[in-house]
Figure 1 (cartoon, one colour):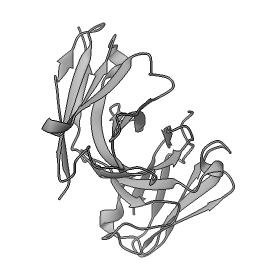
Figure 2 (figure 1 turned 90 degrees about the vertical axis):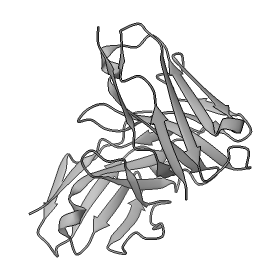
Figure 3 (figure 1 turned 180 degrees about the vertical axis):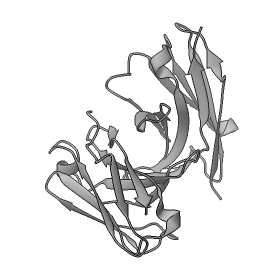
Length: 120
Length: 110
């Protein structure tokens, strides 16, 4: 059974850097074809894809946010970490991590999400 | 990566059908057969209902179906049930390992 769980601060101040961790089970990011993405959703608004990291450590970022995002993985801990710099109130959102299989292009399994509020 | 366009709302009575459109461009919806649809109940994570335009993951009722014509994909929910009331989002592969989501549609069961 695949499960994912996001964790991180519920509140960050403007200009700070956000660090979120996705801890997963039921698959390994050392297995060929496995990938994890981050997706966010501002309150009452649509989903927005942020980033993806693959089993071979290839990384891909949203065109509009790539200068602020870094995705990394710790295969031994079954974790994926997303950092977002220079946080702004418009970045207030629920942040989800999700599993993808390479070449299938859809988000198979999702975490429950973690709400991050940006406010001074 | 501009968001795909969906109608804000759709509705139908129990037993009826509702169809939601998802319009993109030739760089995303029209260029790839990788459109997926997600159901999201309030306060819950999205759940994939359709992938690769018309395929259903195991466990998804066959009341849910998908199609695509040109730059527009569609999700049809037949035989509407109360539990189908939710927000629905489309997503498309946009090339270069990028993804784009739709603006979302709230489906109301009257």
